[in-house]
Every structure is written in structure tokens, then in C-alpha cells.
Length: 230
Image 1 (cartoon, rainbow, N blue to C red):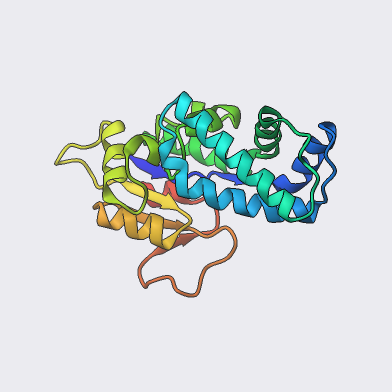
Image 2 (image 1 turned 30 degrees about the vertical axis):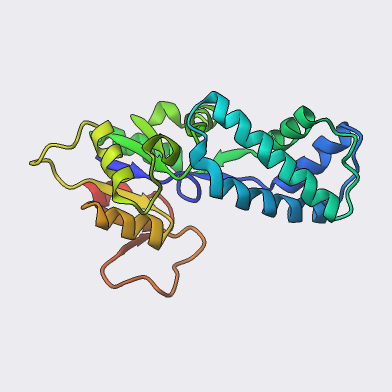
């Protein structure tokens, strides 16, 4: 079986700043792209710190409301006039700005891996909406399952989230071949997978970092992963 990271490995986040500017303009608030980018950086930091609290629909809604208010406060500090935007509208504007898209090589690579008999599970530091993102990007139909850090109660590089992914794939037999994990972070993906007893491949889409330890297989995309996993 193969486990796969999401952001940076399977999907990219489209630049959200222009969409946030447009979404807030529709709601009567004028901000610049520079203001949007700075405020989104603050919001993303808060989201990353708290995404594991979003374990169901209710807690996800609370997290999104909190992030939207962080965004509002950051925009105010940057000089944006957003006081007239209602809380629910700010949440909608934020969510509308966040769009994920699969990298071009991903659908074909996943199809090749499944055709070769590999079970595929996405394992990501994400809230419970990981499954929704996979559906909206069309990737849910190309994998056999997914688990977020919110669901696992632990985030990468903790071994437990990888163990949960292996069990989800039904590949936790003591005699099974070691699972292979592919991800874009040396610390979270490669080191985490190794700590969990998995083999690991680094997906370095933006270029090979200078600190890759000797012996780590590096790919620039998911092309070639099927050959490594065979």
C-alpha cells in the first residue's frame, strides 16, 4: 500500500488573495491584494495551529468562524474597511478564496498505482474537511481512503497517524510488505514515515532541497512512483 500527503504532493492551493479581494468587494468591502495576502498569512497560521480541533461539522464551523474573525482583525490592522461584512459573509468569503487543485500529473499517477494493485490512502495534517476537499478536486474516486490529523488525534510526524492510515487500508498484517509514503516534507513526511516503519519518498516539486539525507529517493512529481513501488 501507499500513503500520500495532500498539500504539496497531491494538490496545490491556488493563490487565494485575488479571490478574497473579489469576494469582499461583492460584499461592499474594498481591500488590496497586498492587504489580503498579509491577512491570509495570519489566518493560515491560526488555522494550522488549530485544525486538529475540527473533528466534526460543529467543531469545523467553529474553527472556520474563528479563522474568519482572525482574518477580519488582520485586514483592519492592514487598513482594510471590513466592518460592514457580516460574520457569516466573512466565513463565506474566506472559504470561497481557498481553492485547491490537483497537480497535472496526479490523476494519471494515482490511476497507474491502483491499476498495479496498490491501495492508496491520503494522510494529511488537515481538519475533517480533508474528505470534502478530495471529493471537490475529483481525487476521492482515485484513492481508497483518507485520514486527517483531526481524525487521528495526532499530526505528522507522529507515527500514530501513519499507523492509522495503514490500518485503514487493511495492510497492517505483520507479514505485509512495508508501506510506502510519499510527501513533500523531510520532517513531517520522510522522518515521520520512517519513525512509523514505512519506506518514504520525498516529492520535491519546487526543487530538491540541499539537506536531503543520503539514500532518500527524491521525485519531482508523482511520475515514477509506480516504478519505485513495484
